[in-house]
Length: 289
Image 1 (cartoon, one colour):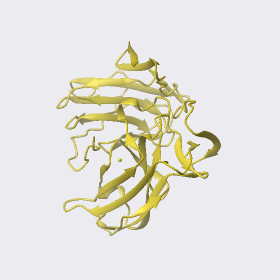
Image 2: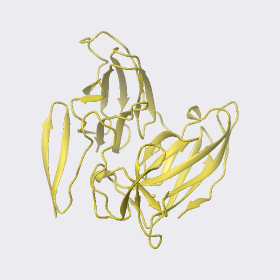
Image 3: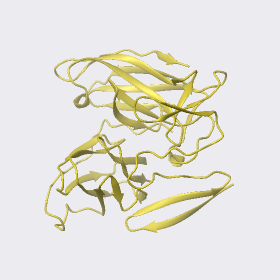
Image 4: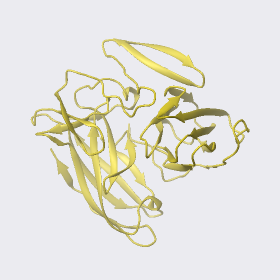
């Protein structure tokens, strides 16, 4: 039985677990913390994006196939067919458990999103014209990459976009998965730089975060919200970066030392991470019920 203790910190909820399984969240000012666990072997090698490999035996190891088909209105619909693996969005940030975790989506090696279920909508605006490689890779809850024989468990398929941002994708890449929210219906977003201390856009909830010297203030936590609410993410970074809300696929440029506000209408439920792209820092998690 897992007993959870909730500590309220400013505008966020930081959850730490005890008992049967330890839950370790991201340390302030660092990228994804890699908890130690007894599952498999934690290798010194990384997956190419800064995450260490957690190697398991080939027999019964997680597997993934990626299929892509054009959406009739915009972009593509992706499906991750998994075996020996299940998605665990509620325990992301905890210790590694056998066959559990989430996935990352990469375009030509650049991270596009974190996936908490088998379905994902890739907007055309995120794919430049040309031929690309789309890769889905499986990770444990502690953000280590599942691996077999020293190679990450992933699937890769070609993706071709024309000048309009749409095109073709083929599925079937296979190495050796509650559906993720669709991003096909964008929520209203507003980015408004302003001087420090100025009020942000009208919202049901405002979450204020600062990044200073690679540290996140306040420490990354979890904010509980209700579907239909409007949340204003007010972020200030001491270096230029990009703010990104996974699941909603919303981005906003972060000029150095200039507060910006991203206004987000919560039109779907789930657990969504807010992070910076270049520095790969988790700023907060939005838990929408």
